[in-house]
Length: 132
Image (tube, rainbow, N blue to C red):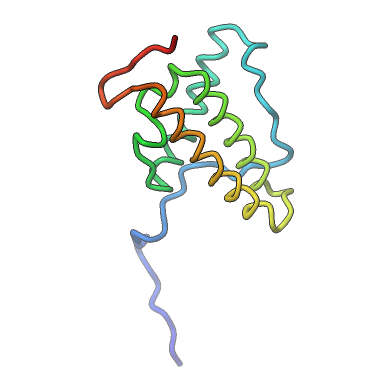
């Protein structure tokens, strides 16, 4: 009989990432940034930053897609919040089976917009430039 030996410690595997985000559950709820005051916006940005940090690491994105100062540019905040909303909807326990594929198609288009916006901002690592 070929039985696997019991594992006493979890195996760390570089291919399979550690769980970092909760499984989305139920319908995703959009954020209307203009409907929130500065304090609420800061809290919402902190939550979004957790997801953006995961996204950049998981998909090996760099400053050409998302600059360090993305939270200082509303075009990035709005785009990334929308992308996060679509991700929550696509990976929710209530999503259709092909929803993750649709999300990846949207993600591809979003990366193009993000790259264009990075070029327009003129921001560089360690150097934020204000819009206008």
